[in-house]
Image (cartoon, rainbow, N blue to C red; front, side, top):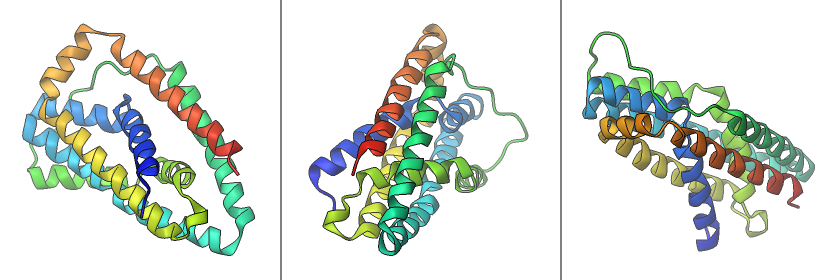
Length: 208
């Protein structure tokens, strides 16, 4: 359903964005450092699988817009491009998230931590906006099957997020120590992510 070039470009951009310091991966890092590897992995997988709800919304919404009005789809792309540029600007201005706050509270079961991560991602309106902004620019409307392409992209994003968050939770202690020894590492990760966001935003605005 996706071409090799289409999927390759998407996965590369998704990995760079997911790896940049942000609320989700810093929470996974903090959970793993404070409560152990299993807790970090469970919470991280929950955060990643929460993306499936956003994938469904994006697949239905984007395909409906294309079917109803090419103009509406163009306006969505323009708004999405501006939103990505705004995210990139804030990432470039960030001081760098080099440490993760320690997770507090009473011990919880792995199932409960998984559900907590799932819910935290699924109800986040900023993630909804991100999916509606990010996925459409990798959809080739000329090939048809817009909903199928969008769903496939969302699944790819979820898989790479699960792999990255799971790995981050598993090696949270080592990653945390590495970041603490290299305080500028988070700063440069933010710079890379900001550049990617702005580049994607401009590409989305200029695309026809």
